[in-house]
Image 1 (cartoon, rainbow, N blue to C red):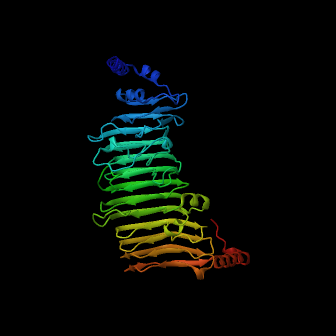
Image 2 (cartoon, helix red, strand yellow; image 1 turned 120 degrees about the horizontal axis):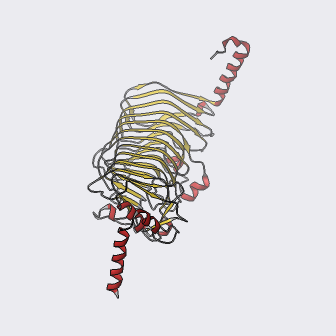
Image 3 (cartoon, rainbow, N blue to C red; image 1 turned 45 degrees about the horizontal axis):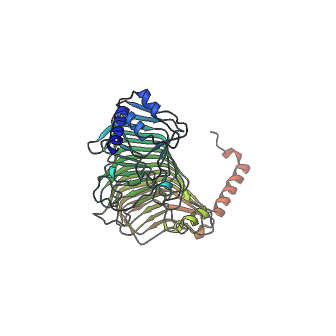
Length: 449
């Protein structure tokens, strides 16, 4: 009986492999119950350049990772849902040849539901097992791929990371929405690991309860899938609701170079941007080179009930908007066009640099901090060594200018150009009243544009 059953399974699998594209599509059930993994994988293994999943009656269920090949596009409509089967403990999608490498892969559209409520992820060390064969908790795990595009899709409720890339080159991640529950507190959105280079991450929205975007050149033993420098990355456009951070850097010695971050919006309950080594053993002093941060519109999160539910109430005081851990090394760090209007009392500084870090050149340009509370708010808390500091157009507004605290710390600034301007609401209102009076009494001073 067992032999007959085994033979029947082999025949059925062989027959599925002989089906035409139309017949394979007919095998897709999409009722939210039946397992559609094999039918979708047959479509991917067919060699077709474009694999399109038609809208299902309810949603597709998969129990194993879908494996996409080089020179292939997997396309879904925006509302098409693919859901990981209960108890599967698996990635949802990986590239087919992670060791040899893939190229020219596009994943477009759909709602990819990691179903973290109904999986049992046993945590432990990898012990050298290939990451494709050991479930780290990501929805997508793409490694060693050139010309990768992931676009216009939603990632929902992963066990850990949404989009996990290692050693990817010339990649684009664009138009992604993260829709996470709060089951885990280590749920990154886009997680870039060692060797990622020449990539763009743009138009990222939603909530992740950890980092919206992480650049981890080094990582813990459990998470690390690739090693190497992260270089030449552009991040542009992040809108978040409930997250630890918008962007997080992590290195224990591997360089991170030539990174542009711009157009970051939202309130965060740790940092908006953080440079860290995260308690890992340092191989050598982590090195960050040529980092440009611009157009940041942010504050600390004010949802007290949310913070209390997560046990994060105290983090508003400990984690700065731009946080830089100790023992790091920077060549050039530029922060420009940062606007913070703070409503949270006792909030952390806008910029905090911890002891042991060395920054060769720090440029602060066109920054405005507005404190809407009755408590003083520190702009820059420096405990590090800054060799060259340039300040241009940094303005601090307090309710009472005499209470303002602009800088403090025990670090060294060897060369400084520019000043931080501070004033209070009373001074500002007096200046506005004076200007209005000037226009009333001397209208010829008005400019014609």
